[in-house]
Image 1 (cartoon, rainbow, N blue to C red):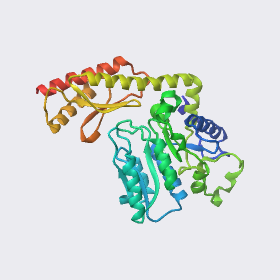
Image 2 (image 1 turned 180 degrees about the vertical axis):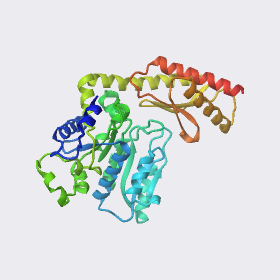
Image 3 (image 1 turned 135 degrees about the vertical axis):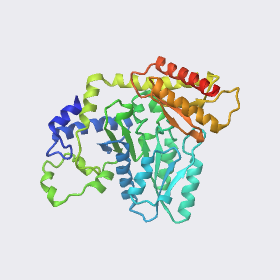
Image 4 (image 1 turned 120 degrees about the vertical axis):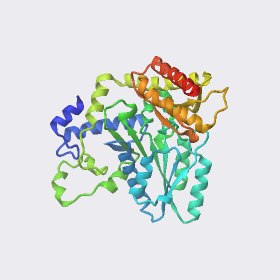
Length: 377
């Protein structure tokens, strides 16, 4: 309904002069996000098409804050989203200076390895400018140690960017706040409301701890836009990111919160975490299934790997590809694959507010059944 209204009115939500209503709604939504994240009053942001666009804007701000060093380096774990590598290339950091840091046994960035890499790169003449952290890694749901990363970035003078596109909205729950402790210390945070805030595509968000860090690189004022400065004193969102042509994305978020209330969102997010934890319990007790990454937020990865059989990994990979295909075509669940530690796995990510334990249990039972049939040949 909200997108229908926004499209029907053909709103370009770029500046206050031509879209004051849409801009005010975006201010309201961004302020909600600021409060939920625990950001200070200096913080702000904008709505984007999604996490990829938001991460690009964030790294532009990080490069600007660092003073455009020629030999810049950026750090991310081996669990990071490919959007970060794309953004690094676009902002002009050389591919070999996009440094991939190994993750630990829980798929979080290895802090010792990161610190060693930063020190070695400085000694080699590089300029470390930013770390891209995960607050809900795509494949595993892993959350990096955000407090430790904030300490390291503060001591090293680096920008801390947190990819919370999937997991960030967990902060509206008490459990999520504990899991994401330290996120409020990040210089920038990406959120995707079309993921775990149950919005229709497309609506992402970039939040920054200091709004001036966005307005400095993006606040370009050509002569042909001088009239658009009327009404100054209000935010012009084209000063905060790459896009100047922008749809009115805030209306659907505002309307859904007003309609359903935050209690409904908190219940849905909490339910996703509960179901993932319960799914891991089922997997751990199964004689057919094995967990390949532990439940984190609402993600758990597993595969068919019977404890009483010794089967080569390559053969197990083929079995699990067959199971995934059958789940797609024969079971109502839609699942994807992941490769934690190089093992082809089934990725259960619960982000549908209608999902019940019966849905999850039936999917796991189907995986067991299809796995047994594939192993029997």
